[in-house]
Amino acid sequence: MTVEEIRTLYEYNCWANDQVLAAASQVDDAAFAAADAVSHGSLRGILVHTLAVEWLWRQRCHKGTSPPQYIPGESFHQVESVRVAWLEEARAMRRYLDHLTDAGLNDTVCYATRRGENCDRVLWQLLVHLVNHGTQHRAEAGTCLARLGHGPGDLDFVLWLGRGRPAGLGSDVA
Image (cartoon, rainbow, N blue to C red; front, side, top):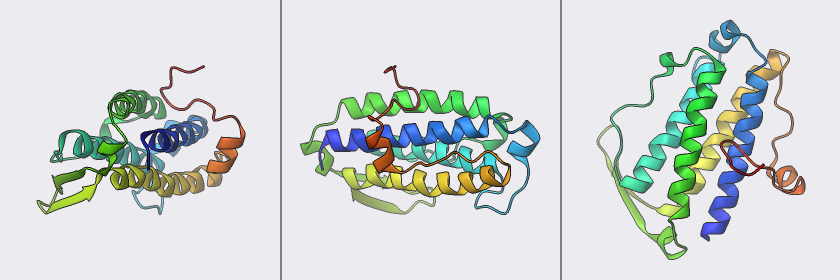
């Protein structure tokens, strides 16, 4: 795996997140926070969890640390607050990715889980995991949004590639 391939996956991840957030912005605050039979209890719960995990894995990959807790979901009352936080996280991840080398992608990252378990993984595998994790939770968010009449549309990687790789969340590219 190369840095360019990781960046491509991450740009897709940002674009797909942006599509889900755009669809979520069509629901009212009550529907955003309403209980739902999904993995994190609500559309808000899914989106905040996904954002928090991206932030957590960047901390682990970049600094080798595991923050003791996630970003608190209760602090996000509206979709816009999640979008603003995600914009900053996307920028921080891009800054991190800009300093990686192809050789560095094969480095081992040692970190402790939130339960205190010591782990070590190859960096590129963790970065691919971050994107894959987002795919899982975007599917769950998409299900919630479709039930509310605001599905995010097709989020397939190959469709994104075919669209000329449009800019994603927090991108400075127009």
